[in-house]
Image: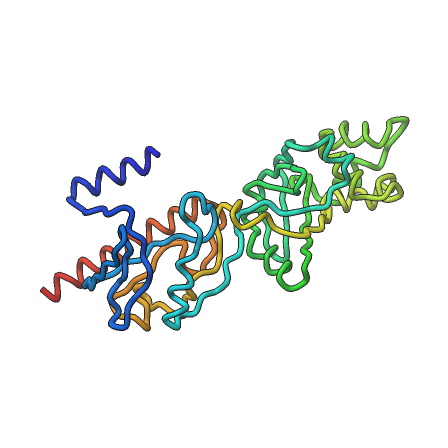
Amino acid sequence: IDVLNAISGELKKKQVGLLTEYTWKGWNNTNELIFEHGEKDHYIKPDIVVFALGGSSWSVTGSDGNWANLFEQKGITIVPFQPSNCAYKIEWDKKFTDQAEGSSLKNIVIICDDARKKGELVVTKFGLEGGAIYALSPQIRKQLNENKTAVVFIDLKPGFTTGEIKNKLRIKGNRSYTKQLKDELNLNNVQIALLKTILTKEEFVDPLILAYKIKHLPLKVTGMAPIDEAISTVGGISLEEVDEQFQLKKIPNHFCIGEMLDWDAPTGGYLLQACFSMGKYLGKYLNSNLRKTR
């Protein structure tokens, strides 16, 4: 709210008019904008139109993506919305979630296809959340779209090679395997519980297999969180529909920026920065272009 208040205050200083309780209903045959207000429709023919209508997550804030239908009616290609930066579903064993739900896996590396991300994950009943897995959304989503499932690999000890881990597990003595993992590799209870829930008993007690799995622990992803729970979405207006200034090729002097375009951001912070940058870039272009035509 502090950010919104700062933006609102700046707009008021610049005497920008803000109209509320107007519902945009599309265009008429002469490309006038149609707004519903009260019981009447209002028609506006502006010199420049900039759309910044958001994606399709968090509908409670008004960001529901319903605007896409209006653009489709004008023959503009819309890529279906999908979640991004969201929780990913893993069919955990209940015994594991009873022990680990809400716990963090810190200082790990998560891998999907050729993408790697170091960071932190949070275990939930639904699956996994956190910045590390959010950053792999494009790769995970691609696999889910193609195969209905995806596979990610977790490296629980990115600071050690597989060979170094094998050496540390070589001498077990009278210790239990759990005690050995704690003593030699400083693995915590959640990490060890994760290994036990993914590996068979035979794999867990084989030091060669165990060393490899600590570096390449496979997890099967079976789905994404509902789109309304996602931090952001992909989909929206195809980038083929806009020029390098974000102008719609089929409707001159109409521009689209922000999350309503089909692009992906690795986290919510990158999403905000990119949206702000688009606004600044387009504003600079329009100010320069308008001065030239006056």
